[in-house]
Length: 119
Image 1: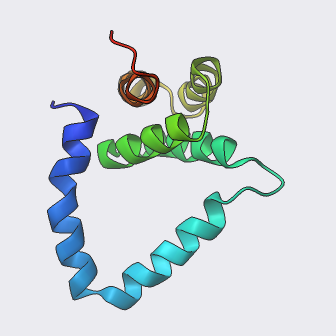
Image 2: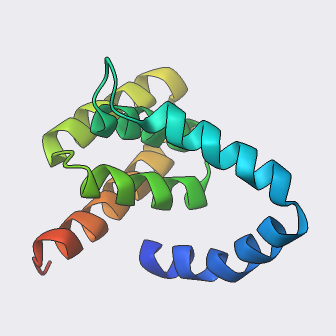
């Protein structure tokens, strides 16, 4: 597999093309996305952790990439991600032991990029 940054880049053009082909659907999804992930009773970074857990359980690498990036940019910590991914493993069992580490790697890829760290 390529990096999660590369995966997001690979999805960019087909997503834009589909968005142009079905603009009302994408506009509705965009509004739902923004409303669901906005700060509220739960901070936005916690909502991104929830979305990351669901991404693991749904086994969606694209979703993992987008939500790991958002979690990192919204200030989620590695400890928070580890605990959230522990819940994914609890709820999904074996498959989450494959997709959880993918989410962990994706988070670190984006968190390191945010901080300028090199692994």
